[in-house]
Image (tube, rainbow, N blue to C red):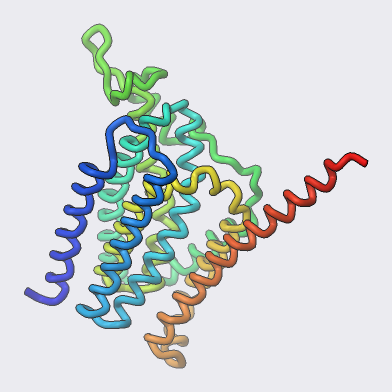
Length: 322
């Protein structure tokens, strides 16, 4: 077996064991996930991703391992941005909290399958037509600019989405969760519940986010192993991250700008890669990318928390009666 085949085999075994552990021991059907449980699950998936980083370091070398870590952090930060949209979907369709875990799990597993297809097609296109990377770079610049300048009033409405309208036009839907079922039968006919709609929307919305995230990861590394593993680990950790951050994610007002700066940076790096590679060593580029991602994401989160506290103190001062 080649070194890459060994890594893929280990990744597959670890992933299968982790999913069995998550489903069998951590997650319980129709049970509300507490903050403590969400923290344990988040720690579990992050620790697993970091353990794989150490494994890659010994098996593939420092450069590949750091590319994986950079790509994972990029995907993980974009996942935080996904959470707000997921909250809107659950709220819009009035899903009971006890059904959140399973709906998220199925939606995320579907999203992983879609991403694998998307990555495979994207990598094949880049291998055959290298100039596509310049299109990806320009797309990331545009996306980063739009994300940086987007107003908070541009809120996503799940009932106005093309996915929901498509499902509504082709499938018989019922306006309830069917007692936790995805398909119910009425008068001998199958009807699809709001839980079914939510699962499809979670998977499709994640695929929309992948249009940004996968080109961004390809701007960090062209190694298929890095692209596949970083994406899958980040998406699998999204469910526990949802329960951990759903109450706080709305307070990260400037996270979007931090992610936007990273996308612009990677877009510029992709567009200027030919000239950058002549002056900057590949390993140094990996360290720079990792540093920029860590600085922008952590900086935007801490700045959001600081501004939120400052606003809270200001509001408290204005409410004081003399």
